[in-house]
Image (cartoon, rainbow, N blue to C red; front, side, top):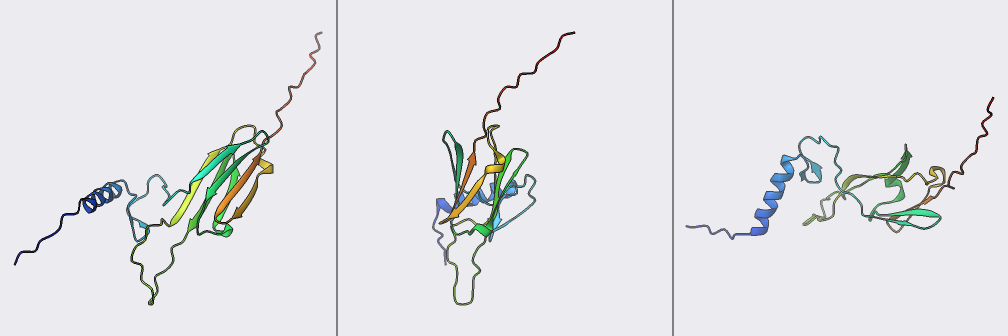
Amino acid sequence: MNNITRWNPVSEFEDLINRYNRYFGVARSNGEREGKDLFSRTDWAPAVDIKETDQAFSIEAELPGMSKDDVKVTVQDGVLSIQGERRQEEETGDRKHHRIERVYGSFIRRFTLPDNVDENSIRANFKDGVLSLTLAKAEPAQPKAIEVNVD
């Protein structure tokens, strides 16, 4: 008896991508990373929009399915970091997962702040899965005249 296997070019492509990812240590199995992670890669990165007005910069990050407690925003040495983790729902006895396309796990996004940002005035708001940050611009430093006495 001959078994006929239907050729699926998409599965061959997925296999190629998985082998490539495994080679670089970023392939995932059941939401977990395989291999060594030499470059501290994250599982996913939320999309962000960055806008500017005369008074401030604004950053909006899409974080669907997360709450404000899942996200941490820090500023250190002129770098703004947004980090957190989106956790996957556990499979239970009465419910099976047939397909999982959303990405889960930890993330970190870092942005170098321009010199004209007042780091002490950053405000954050989280609503409907969107983190909104407002970074007020600092007043430009006024040139200071120093009188030089000549003897």
